[in-house]
Image (cartoon, rainbow, N blue to C red; front, side, top):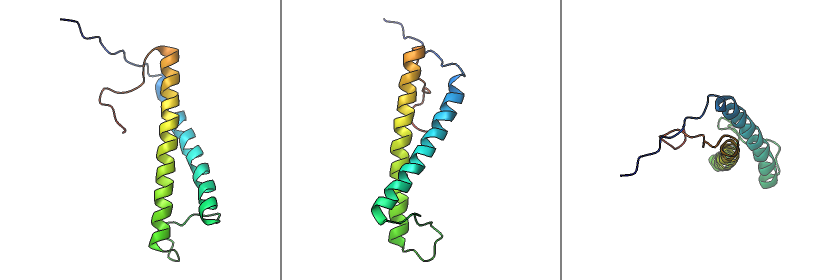
Length: 101
């Protein structure tokens, strides 16, 4: 029977990098959403859920677009960071349970 290889633990040094990547992805996603909303609706400001003068359709469209952009940008930044960490340390920076927190 072959022995199971133990998964190497990534050093705590990834924690600050992960924080920086999260902050960066949020900033990039925010900028992308602002530009996308301006292109879609030709408005500088997207509607807020508590904006009484906006329709349900506008509110939900803005939320859906924003959510999609944030998910794509976060995944792209996280994946790029993980690939970089693996190239430099030889260890993929994920927990045993997988999935998003």
